[in-house]
Length: 62
Image (cartoon, rainbow, N blue to C red):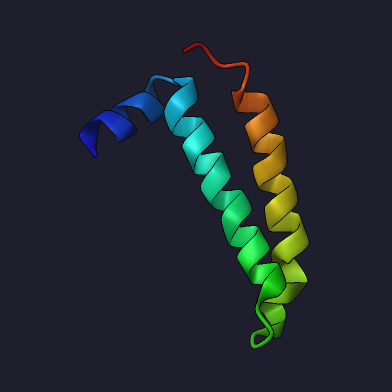
């Protein structure tokens, strides 16, 4: 856990890509669930944020 936080602070690609992937997965889950309307409403922006974040952090150093 500490190396994950250390990787985030040092702007390393691995931890940031994992975080972006988790955000994308949360957005897709929000899109597919039929119970909470606010989650469905914000699912596209969450997925889009994760996707843009993934594109940006893919240029970070290894």
